[in-house]
Image (cartoon, rainbow over all chains, first blue to last red; front, side):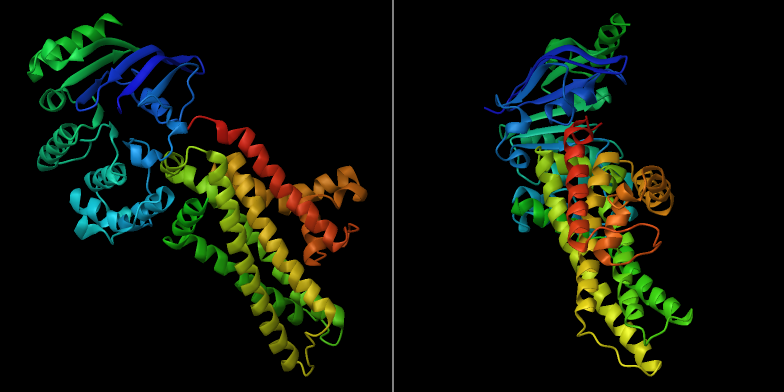
Length: 235
Length: 246
């Protein structure tokens, strides 16, 4: 199994407690929408799951194993994080080859994922020439490169045009349909309402709701009113 | 470790910045030797020939900055996140960088050496004297110069990992060489000053810039420089490299 499990996570940065006692499970075969206002601890939680941030308490495991102990991390988990960057002078294909080399993934797979995200024609362009949407697609290509069972995506629709958003929705649905675990952190509720099966709503570093989207309401409006009520209660 | 080494090499070979930076080394050698001759260096004096070749060690200034980019440059562009996702074992990442950057530093030193020999031979011929590379002294100077290029690349990797902020790391390293080591040397006295990194590099590269300090033997300076590279890297591994990547 490749579900993602977060248990009793707490993380403090200086005087700010970003995450306090967060616990939830994102099941395999489903798109889990990870929702919360700005500063609610979503990104910190994802970074703990990925071993980039060390929690003060609690743990996060992927299929029962912490990220740092995965035998082949990039082939197990694909991640798209907002702060992850690109060298502006590096070509898109070379950026992915750097990742492929480190993970022992054959270079031929790079052109496949470039095609998958619609960047085949831009493969030899330097990233400094890329629009925000193209960078987002390149980041997604990096996440998909290892054909991972688990995907952690922070605001993946950022910068995508309407056609790109529709494409992304199909991509995420397809990945979950294959039995993969897909976690999408976002605050674009209407988009999550169309994509997710399962939602985890957090605010002030704590889980306010975790369960099937159908338990809240499958329309964007129903999700929005539930979200506002759940996250306002926390103050 | 091999995949990480391949990845580090790919990072270097797919951007232009590091190569432009390293190309400045041989240019410094050309300008430095021309300056030595034009300012009245006597080509008939074997010591002047050695002094010309010692410019190879000064070119290590650029391998130092080159090394700083290894880790600090990744923090600057945010690519460090992807690097640590590929290898959660951060110590292995830095070890791979040390290997690759030291190797490139060696090549940079060899190129600077070749340029130094060619330029010195040309000047000596122009001044009507023949240039004798066969002298053991020349080889020791060139070998030492290459060693300084390697050591400074490795020290740069350690400094960049320890400081992480690219601008601060470069500023501190250059300020140390230009200013701080001189002051520190006066404070601690010449007996201790020769153990400081730039003085040790002068011993290795046989490029006695100031003449104020009694230098270590060449091999001793080499050990001291290797020690600094290890010390900075280990310090980074137990402090800054363990910190959260946000």
